[in-house]
Image (cartoon, rainbow, N blue to C red; front, top):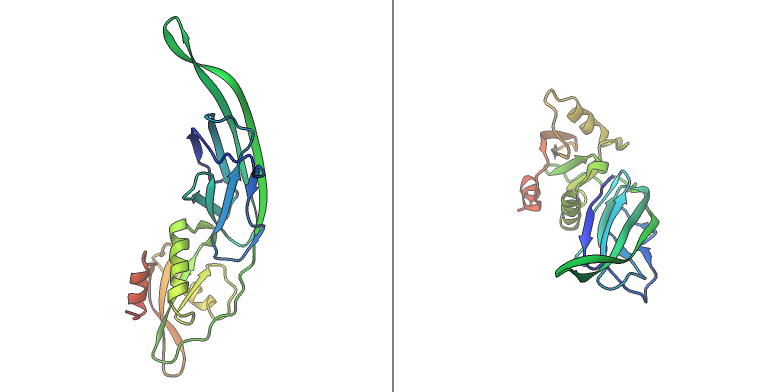
Length: 227
């Protein structure tokens, strides 16, 4: 599980909103998911200590606003849980010394379920003879937020027939031979891996480069000759 403890003076306190976790219950694959945790009945100025957890195959990082979380998750059903306690204190002078005295406390426990749809698009046709295309092979459950952003940028700026991103367990009959060849190398290449595949005059495809996936969109485009 992925967990981060927060200790803040204020959370997303909005009595006019329903307390709990707000999140789309069904989302498309490869799209960021935004969750908002809203607390109510918490006194102003209370100190809050809490956690947000996700199960295997999903991860998050804090959003730009307090109480928001950007989530990436592989296809399937997932649960997000927010739990914590709040404590309200006030300063009291005792024998000339200022001490914090407990005034009130409470706890919260919210859960929401969301589903990421399956991604089973057909393989795009190969590019014309003489061209080359890239294949990124990853372990989807280990995808980092940085990689998720890079994949999204790549899909938005590179034609579908020039770059394919797949999980290592794909059942695609076209892509499986390349993954099997990668798995059979004497020196393992860590995932995500990048294969550069050329298309000859007869339309045959052959991988002529294999290595760790570049970490930037610019490097991927350079390998594909798109600069």
